[in-house]
Image 1 (cartoon, rainbow, N blue to C red):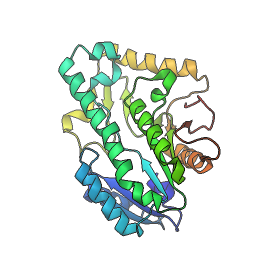
Image 2: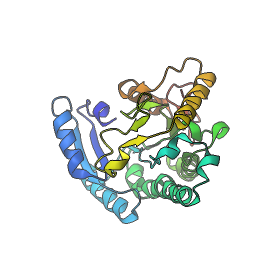
Image 3: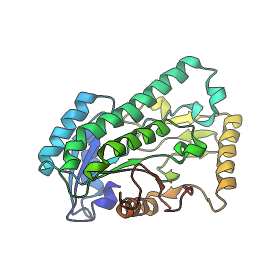
Length: 272
């Protein structure tokens, strides 16, 4: 998303990250030739109110006290073998399930509520006034089994509070996007992408799964294909990001999108 938005010279981008030094190096290496926009990297941790408060103050300084768009994209997703299991099977390890749920609520819900609240003064000072939560199709009411559903509700609550001020809050589902994570059926391993090693123990960057767990992952993909016949697998970021941006640009309070769940396809209910 930073790569796509940075192609416009009149954009100023503030990216909140946990690992500032590594991100600055990556931006310098990968965007030096095709990023005329101003890109600022600000350290922030979604699990820390004080960290987000400091990030809001730094962002205000960098942007002159206003931002047009706030994009809530951070989320915690368990990366162990439970990723492939249904919730009933995960519950057989109660301590890990409780720890994961507590972590997801803290990061995906509470952290984003703090993010919204702390950055609202900057949004209110702009003319555009749009807050976008990048959510999940699994958080849609009809298929709800995700902590993102709680974040969607929080987005609706904020929309109810601030629509009188002309602020649009929306949830956008990007569908299934290829971030470099992959399953190798030959070796039964699940490899996490290059962004994870600095943040995770090395033992978690390549996870061995059982044939049964591989079958469960295949069953999930089969359900996606059954519900969305033209689903061919994860899309590429280069194709998905422009669709997401178009979705939030087209959305407005006047059109009734406030607090709404919008798939990047632009077709209600079609998030894959």
